[in-house]
Amino acid sequence: MMDPREINLSDPKWLPGEKPVVKNVRAAASSDNAVVTHTMLKVMQEGGNAIDAAITGCMVQAAIEPFMTNHAGTVTFLFYHAKEEKYYQLDSTGTFPADLPAHMPVPQGMGPYAGIPPRSVIPGFMPGLKAIHEKFATKSWDALCEEAIWWAENGHHVSNFEHEVNLFGEDFVTFFPEGRAFFMPDGRFPRIGERFGSEDMAQTLKKIAEEGPDFMITGEWADEFIKKANELGWMITKEHMTETPARWIEPIRFAVGEYEIVSLAPPQQQGVFIALVLGILEKVGIRDVQPYSAEHIFYMGHALKMAQYMCGYCQDPHVMQTSSNSYLDERLHASLASLIKGMKPQVDLTSHTVFTTGFGGGSPFVDSMTGGKMPTPRQNSHHDQPSGSCELSIVDSEGNWVQMMNTLQSGGIPGQVVKGIPMVGSHALPNVQGSPMQYYQIKGARMRSVMGNTMVLKNGKPILQLGSPGNVHVTVPQVLCNLLFFGMEPYEAIRAPRMLALQEGGSLLIEDRIPEDVQMDLLSLGIRMKVSGVWDYHMGSFQICYLDQKTNELCTIADPRRCGVADGVR
Figure 1: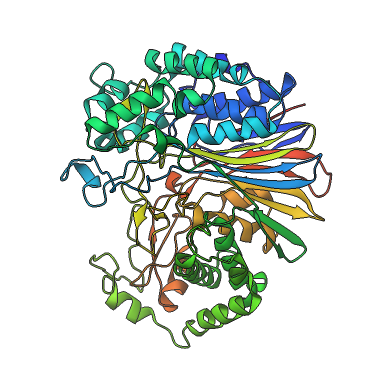
Figure 2: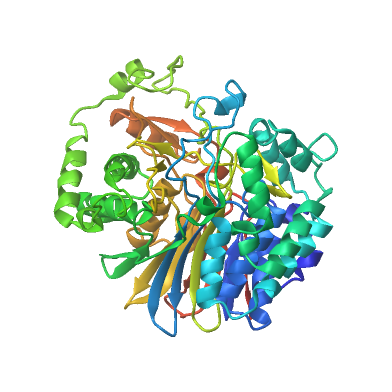
């Protein structure tokens, strides 16, 4: 274990790339940042449990990765309590005031966000950490804030990855003077290797340490947040800050062969999405299919597309009578699998696929065929939104397992910074059934969203946990398919190419590691492949802890697509 304060994040060794499998540890942690991982390990080495490590990790991550998460964003949390042998879920996404119209301060015509501007929301990050700390932590709140304060005061070295993400999100984070002052303190983004911190953030974190999370919920920071919102025309009050508390939920649980899945229940979509995709794949006979053959990609693309449609009917049970059992019904899986198998062509569709590419919702381009071959087009796997969110995977020496997300998404006023805390608002939409993020403005309601916190059980106990940002809903079931149906080792499962759901028009976006013969086979099945790059960080960054099924050793890994680091206490 390293001293986290001595880590220089601009060191090339922390860049995206192949990662080691860390084996035989008594406590484990995996995050997308070396400082965060080693800070969490330090907490556990000094006697804290997985919860203490998770809270500290979230606080530090928001201090050193404001391009990915922040203290005004969202928290979701899945926890196995070893002593109780019980699973817990917490949902603390940002919330919408029930009695005010949607507030969208992004100027129309400003950058790529003018089409669907972010909406202002009440932050969920601190209410979530407060609920988790009160229920499960062993260390004092102020002790868990110390590292975040140090990093805000001293700054962190800017990495190449951070600089790249800042440039990607420039239009969004800099359209208000407050955003420019925070992210561009010298009139530009900090260069690679420079230290970047915020004295204003440090002062706020000191107050949070002294007064607890309530400083940002009902205290001085909340007052400043409300004042800024009112100035911008969003007339929230102190009552709105506590109108919808963080919600404890019974997680969804279902069998997949000899294993069980525990994942996030509604209003989160992830659990039912996994159940649908894996259930459909089981019924089409995916276990007998060659991994990453055209047949596998065909079935996966269709299953993901079908699940996206079906999950439009998944809503907050506080608002509608959403029953997860409907999504777990094997008869539904069999029926949907039958529809997908019926879509498998009985004739070669290569010429049809080539001649009609660009119609029916696909992106138009000109094809040129040479000897039966054709170029594979490039396409982005994101939708011009900030590339934020951070997954934490932690197991302590007492056998407690934590898989959680902290994210800049769905927090505060987009583009604004209040007392050193940046915010990005929410891209959730009202009344859009097909959107992965939807909300109803009803008192007590939480938005339907997709976070990836998931555990795999054997004989009722966790043997693996995983989660990821970046097109979460589609990437988690793909990795689980690799693990549970294809029998891949965990690192092999996350290293394999990942795809989005099959698009209207017959195109399918996947990382550029599919052999040419498989691409030609896909053409014959009516699917035109598009590529997003060999390693696409918008396809996620999995953080995993697991028990080796041969040795029972605790192991941990990080995804090669981002700057993730996994390590353990030996």
